[in-house]
Image (cartoon, rainbow, N blue to C red; front, side, top):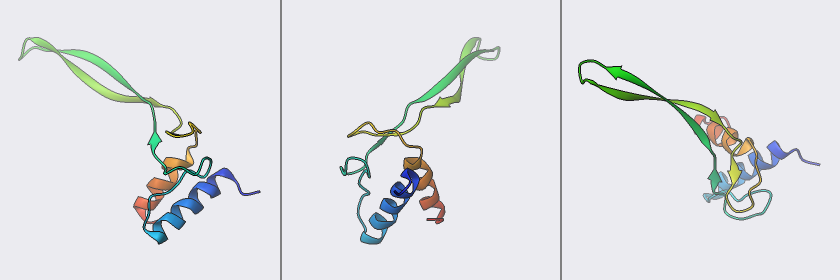
Amino acid sequence: MVKKQNRVEEEYKRARVKGRQPVCPYCHSPLRIGQTVQKDVSWHWNSDQNCFEPVVMDGDAEKPFCLACQTRDWGFIATAVDLIKGEV
């Protein structure tokens, strides 16, 4: 049996060669990825402006998921990042 990560990576490779959008290896729909990322906001006083200003920082991120079937897989974005770097 092919590991999940390999299924995602293989689909990204096939899509790249064929010049098409990858499909979800779980439901076979065109892959659209969702991910929930928490933002941490703290408010600091700006004495020059005489008001509070937000300082926004990225917080925790949930595992990305296929918007069609809701299957969660870190490979969806890990493989995409490798593609951008040219490592896949």
